[in-house]
Image (cartoon, rainbow, N blue to C red; front, side, top):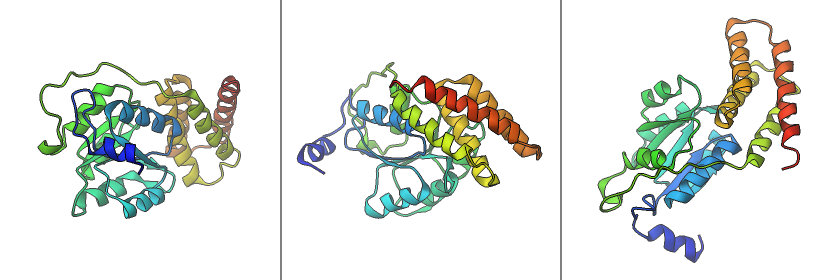
Length: 238
């Protein structure tokens, strides 16, 4: 930590930067969703660290203890539910543990595992984000006095979305492993929802249904792969 960073993290929270002094670990596999979180933390005064898997999260947690951990339910090497359960049962406990997902069942899973709250994707409202974190912070970590609820929103860089789509395109070239395909389906549905891409989100839901029912998926996988390549081509100039 450099001297400026150290100075910012020891300042008390303010009405405009109510999360000053907090370190937020975001466990999120999507670069696009992570970029939204980075902007939300930046506008709120918090310092952010990112892990893109359970393994990476455990490496972070072995080195330092964050004030807040935000855990995506679907991760490439397992379920975020397990990490939420570990964090909320540990002593000493992290001040705030929040789950996040674009899956309709994500909130129930996160809260059942012990999460303090839940952030439904996509997350763009600065005021909502701040309120969800502050709601569960100890009183001595709260900003003093009145706080104006911000109505600002954040817009992640589409370069991060392109990176997510490119990673998905590579994985779709060999969708033979059922577990990997289930994860990829969830991943694509999440980034589609975060990006407001209703067509891709609908096709990901169709693929999920085919998998659940044990039906053939090859045609649907090929359809989604083409959609992903089309979207990468649209952002090629970025």
